[in-house]
Image (cartoon, rainbow, N blue to C red; front, side):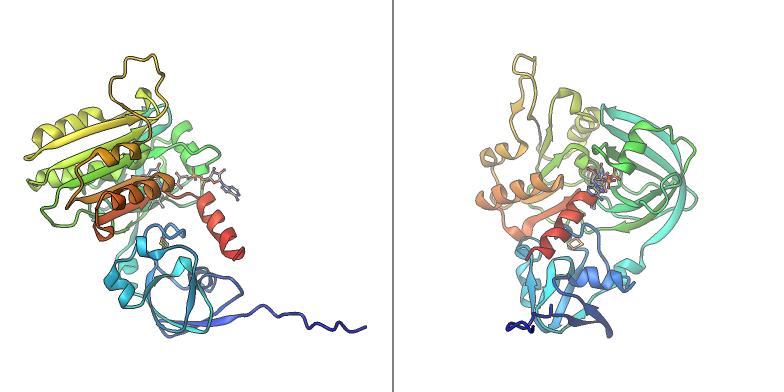
Length: 351
Ligand SMILES: Cc1cc2nc3c(=O)[nH]c(=O)nc-3n(C[C@H](O)[C@H](O)[C@H](O)COP(=O)(O)OP(=O)(O)OC[C@H]3O[C@@H](n4cnc5c(N)ncnc54)[C@H](O)[C@@H]3O)c2cc1C
Ligand code: FES
């Protein structure tokens, strides 16, 4: 018996990436196909949050999985830029991608010289590198522990670049997470860590615009690095720093923030916001989600830098835009995990 209906063959397309032809299977993103074919395509979060995989669509059409207008500015959109991790071809495509940033990355070995608990679930990991690694405050690196080979994870530098080749990272324990559990629960002093970086575009843009900085949990790391770098450069920009945490025991590095506020040469407002602090505690500061505070701020003409869990960033971006901050003046680093990347791959297959 022959079926009256012919089975539909899933469509494949070809992507020509910087002149190299890559087969893209049904519902696959351009980034996924490129990495499958061992092309060194720049990327990081794989969920449309960091713009590392930005590339130009020279020919062809794609279906976008998320609204890339939040990440790319109007000029970039007009020039045909897309995010490879969020683009599924709907025809054969030609892609141009700048791989120079990828080429500036180096892998340098280092040793753990300090493992210091900052809160019950955040640990400061300090490394001494064999050679200095130059980076901009706000960027991140991919770290691999000798005890977890093949499990590289991204962490933001928690200080500006130092001349003594030491690096600091704040690592929050993710339930069920391999790397972050090792850092928070095992003795790693003296262990070797491979550092691959720098990466990312989360650095302070030169401007006089007032600064709104929003950090959630370990997202304070790059925000402190940005501020420490700017205070050395005598920035005159007014700062409002929002720090979201669950309770008082989740707040950390408050001395560093006080010290920055004293040295800052313009107005510096620090607002810690606690979401799960006991009602009857001695806390007199703001309560609720960190994003709830945004509508009460004076936002006109501000530039915003956001760092922390993806949900917090999405909510903060929406509130800032509602409050009149231009989308092009919002910079964000989403601390995505393997789980987010797996969820993103699953939703690509579901379209
Ligand atoms: C640009 C960037 C910068 C970052 N900076 C920081 C930083 O400064 N500080 C910080 O604390 N974090 C940061 N992160 C997050 C960090 O990279 C790690 O994702 C985080 O520490 C978790 O890593 P892990 O190995 O502990 O967890 P993973 O082992 O990757 O697991 C993460 C979650 O996914 C689940 N999971 C893993 N594998 C599977 C699977 N196969 N199926 C289903 N579920 C699975 C786990 O149970 C867990 O809940 C950053 C992320 C990015 C993208
Ligand atoms: S890798 Fe595509 S936006 Fe982060």
